[in-house]
Length: 368
Image (tube, rainbow, N blue to C red):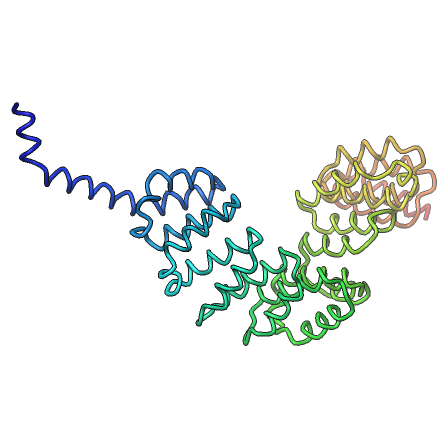
């Protein structure tokens, strides 16, 4: 009886606490969903929304709504996204982030018409919105529309330039190549410090067939990244000479990513190509310069026909990896060393700085 009476006497505090709890959950919902989205756990993010926000969607913050729509895009739940759009239609007119996320949802789910309709209805379009729409056209194989949209942008930034080049690379036509050349001449020099832009430009030139222009731009570039090498290599036939270029590129980079690429490609090469001494030499050079001495040694000693450049690549690699003793030992196995082998030998001796190496230098120099 007392319990029943107490429950009747305290209706307001109970309701207040329940509402306070709901408000608190709304505040935390967007943050918690973002954490899940950042971890690419989109299904879990939507499950959280279904649990705490689906029945109160009109009271949710715009930040939370963008997280819901982002999750819908990544799982391909277009139907849910459209339902939410209809419910929050009034909010999309005033919030650029919600509008942008909706456009991304539509193009990501291949509903380009809905994306275009929403995009056209927005009076004050941001540069990011143009980028999302262009990217959507490219994703849905409508590169011509992406180019047309680019021409509507008054002051395109480097992201828009990248997307333009990506569009031209998709078309692979003479008209696309002419546009790439025209725009690349008008680009501010500061844009070329963006490795992503340079990579997309190289990719467009190569795919549109202007290898000479691409090579000229590539070799004149002071800062090269792995993706730039990749863009160049995609334009070549991935065998023989092209494999040599790839290995040479990786040797210049000297990174773990480059080493992983060398190993991956070397496993895919037909065995017949290993009879090409130039290819084998470039592979040895790449392995040594990327720090995998053991793999290079295994490949070198398993090779039946060794040529002088292969010895040179190994010796240079030993010097590069602070193993001058091994370079000298390998030199002593060469029957008729050339001048390159001699130079590397002297570099090895200089690295050791011992009396024995000085005597060796004197001995060899007398025989030259």
